[in-house]
Structure formats: C-alpha cells, structure tokens
Length: 74
Image (cartoon, rainbow, N blue to C red; front, side):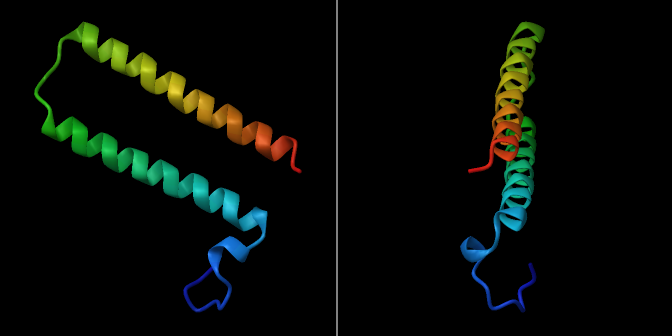
C-alpha cells in the first residue's frame, strides 16, 4: 500500500490492513515506552518488576488476540 495508491486504507483487504495495524501499534507502543522511560526518574526494582509483568501481560494478550483473529477469520 503506497501513497500513490488511490485506495483508502480502510477499503484495503484484511491481508494488508491487519499487518499494517500491528506494525503501527508496535511503533506507537515503543514510542510511548521510550518517551515515558526517558522522562521518569529511576524507580525501585520492585516497581520496575511490576511494570515489566504488566507490560508482558498486556503484549501477550494483544498477541493472543491477533493470533486468534487471524486463525478464526470471519
């Protein structure tokens, strides 16, 4: 999908939209993570461990949801 294409992104087939949405979500997530990491002071190891567990849980849920969507296409 290029800028020169006349097709609007939401009219594109799912085989193009889903990977594009995943990449955009990952890039935005990494950008937010890097901004928050550089702006906040150092935290205690316990707090960092809790944040890591929450982040792993969130991204695992997202990955499982996307996988199920791809497996059980409707």
